[in-house]
Image (cartoon, rainbow, N blue to C red; front, side, top):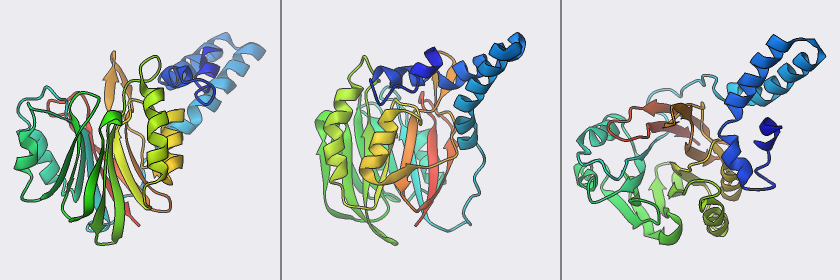
Length: 274
């Protein structure tokens, strides 16, 4: 019954909060069913497998594009209290990022933008309702002024990519229900639907990949979550995936995780090929 409630996100935001535990509950159900055996046991195994299979499939390795292909996007929640961002700056530089989408930029770690100004000179920094700010750093020039949706943790700007212009966005959501994420997403969705396509969006969603929150944002922006699925944060010792990069539908998108380097979130590097 609790496992079933993890699918209730479309009905009530509490479902997204419970969805964090879906893979762990499903695995426990499979183990319990194998121990129990009999008709009820096999029914439990079947239920656990049905819930777990899409998650395991999303974790499968994905073939990487050839070197030099596509757009390299780096996403990371920096952790606002990090006071020496030099290692993170070096990792962004070493990743070959063309665009960096960052969250929790703060007075403590704010030197990071200057450290990267020579390789990512086009920069937008927008105050956020959540700790720190959201920011966009780009190798390529902006087309028009960046837009800061300060109250809902969103920054976006049109970027002149070699493959054509795209809307690029950095997002930081609050924690799910009973915190303010549902209200925040409700305010964001009309803005996201109005973004010019194609859209590249990444950030700390504080929501798992199979949540209604991620699904609704992907639908609003005409995007798909880039994979494979890998944990990006530890919640009470449990590895969970709450940092996401959404790429335009029809694009090839492959991510790889980067180290924490003082932050409580791992970064991710994605290669996007239109």
